[in-house]
Image (cartoon, rainbow, N blue to C red; front, side):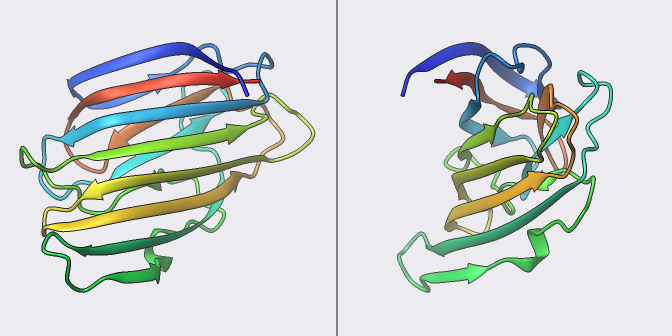
Amino acid sequence: MILTLLTTNIEDDDANSAFTSSIDGTYDEYMFVCTDIGPATDSADFMFNGSTDGGSNYNVTKTTSVFYAYMTEGGSNPTLTYYAGADLAQSTAYQQLTESTGGGSDESCGYILHLFTPSNTTYVKHFYARGHSQQSSDYSEDYFVAGYFNTTSAINAIDFKMSTGNFDGVIQMYGIK
């Protein structure tokens, strides 16, 4: 596997982080590495969506499934659970990647999202993501998301944002061969 860094977005109190170029037929897999994502608003959810029109609209229909493991900072109440509240069923909404990420100096999230064959115009586009979030309620959370964009149109842009407020952080897009 060869990773090629294509783009780095450095966000500083920004509303979103869009990748509107370089998602094309060059690579069969794209990986987005989201590092030290800190929301300006306490208890915000980190989210993403795709576009088929170069980023004019982020409203691609998708179906997803979410589960997560969590425990308190002190190590109590370890839990693994399916999270139906974050699933999307043929929805154009942004997909939630974290729940209630804290806005404190010791709270943030990090994520890796994989997108497969986004330029293919025959099949739907699959993705999966895994990340970690420090919640505002002092829970450490390991989040898993999988699903697909239900379109045969090419996905040519991806956008990340918080459910409310701005955020800081670095998001890098890699092509994988």
